[in-house]
Image (cartoon, rainbow, N blue to C red; front, side, top):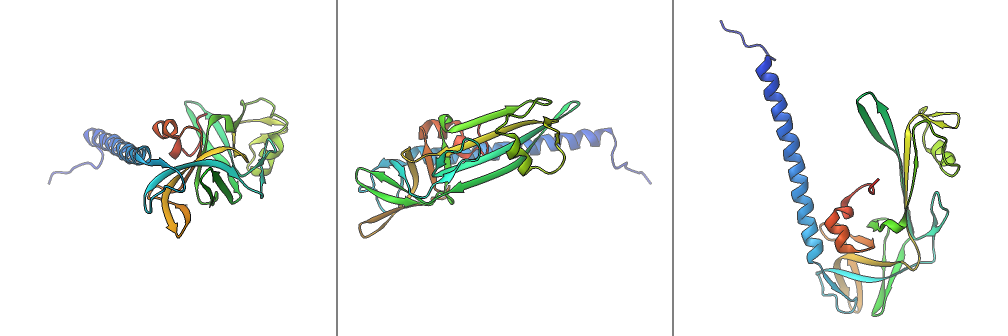
Length: 230
């Protein structure tokens, strides 16, 4: 009776090919999905609060204002919204592993004021994207001393032995993003009317609050990127 080995040379090549094909299909699916979201955002009509039509995907611009502010973790600014990401890059021979060591978002509810009116937005439930001028980046190379402002933060949020005195045995990057009072923003979502009141609610892609150029950020994929470019 003939036998068929489970893993002969040909089978290994077939499995490797299937793995590559599956990876390519997943990447292609994500690219198609992102392309569809990008087209929807770029087709959104830019309008004023007063002229937003019921159920329409719109872009409404205004100034972010709020009385309740939250402090940024590193630069200690008073912000309407802030996100901190701490990443560790652990080097091994032939391999670089990147881990998100800590991630936190703080936000207050705030209003967007425009010439035709104002409306409230919930920063906690929105996808907030800020331009590069609102991103504070820090980098500590492997074996280098931490910047004084980074070390307490890193010690607070990591507890698995990645520090050796005041030296890092991994490279560490931090990204502190902030939306500040008075920043001009574009709010992207579905217009909902109740009498004379207008709310901007999430579309199928969510509710976006963007500080910066909406179209360039959409075209670059930054609206859906979890972590800013390093």
